[in-house]
Image 1: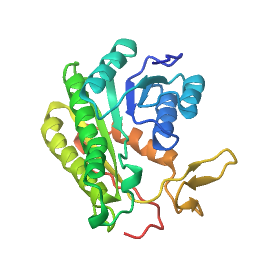
Image 2: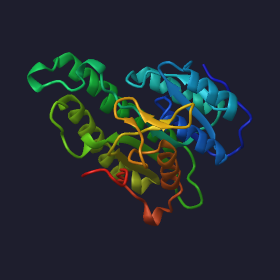
Image 3: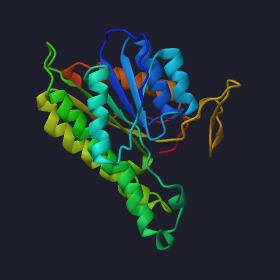
Image 4: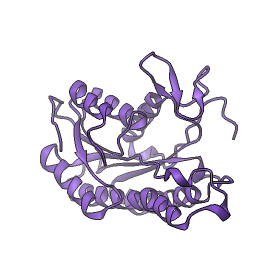
Length: 256
């Protein structure tokens, strides 16, 4: 499923993982920057995604990012309808609700594997297909072929108690990003690992910013997804002489 609106003739951006936080903010900011934007989710009919389509012309696609065939089909559909993406954002947490805050000895091994599958494995599939697509396209005059961004979490840096499954998945995604950056950088593809160290609070209908578990934002003590999106756009536009590999983002009051 997709809906193509009246966007500009700029670069194509693909956001894999659709929700009201970072993904929605990226879709808005990329569109406002003149990019043709696609967003993919297992459930592309979420109200926030429909709103993005109506207001910004964002194209919606159905995709299970943990399924190889679904990911291949997604990239083929995006390329045929919008063009080959020059910016790909993998923004999938991957945690299974039932594994959240479980002691190690209580963790269901099947849910651990599912978390890894949803997160690190889907990152591999999306990253692999993004690289294939970008390498098949001509480089720019500055020999740059595109940018692949991986959103990650604090667990990519430190393994917390009661979070074994997510620590495995997040560390796996970090290792994947580093390997890809070293392999693909010399071929003109900028790979960036973006650990988000803190709660992300997105804007509600009443104008406040809230996080589903941490509560309301107070004095910008939680990350603003609009500011994350601005950072992602900056990373994509970096000159190859100063490419950033790892951009850790945290609010000013966060302890680390």
